[in-house]
Image 1 (cartoon, helix red, strand yellow):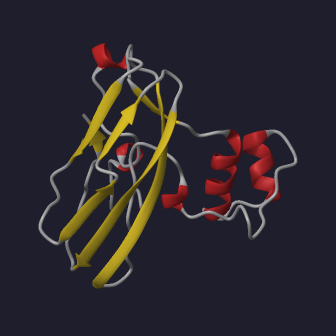
Image 2 (image 1 turned 180 degrees about the horizontal axis):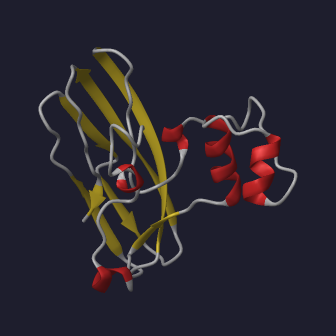
Amino acid sequence: MSLTKNTDVEFAYGSSHINPSKAIDPCLVYDAVEQDFVSFLCGQGYNATTLKIVTGDASACSAINNAIVWNLNYPSFALSAQQPGSISLTFNMTVTNVGAAYSLYQASMVAPSGLVVKVNPSSLMFKAVGEKQSFMVIVDASIGSQCYQVKYKGT
């Protein structure tokens, strides 16, 4: 993103809107460890020198950890296309239940015209606090000259 074209660039990335009263009891959390962020930074073009500034250690980029932005296990995701046409991408997510022991979460979303969004499985049933489960968000898009933003939120 360019600051000259996008004056709100510092607000263009993130985990969606927050509700401060619900932040005390999030129910589900997305696990991301230091290595996830190292892989993300490698995918953004960082090298050992620039990584050391961020991590303070000897982290290095390799073919294995050179991840692209959509590999970061984060509650929001981005899909980018350089040219108009069709694109399909699968986001693999893992969440940990920090809510009630027996909890059911159902995916809900509204996709704008031109996007087909599927979540598999569409619901997650947890039996314990601390239990981890994974799901996939599959996005099929017909990209024209417009921009889309889709947010996924478990309910």
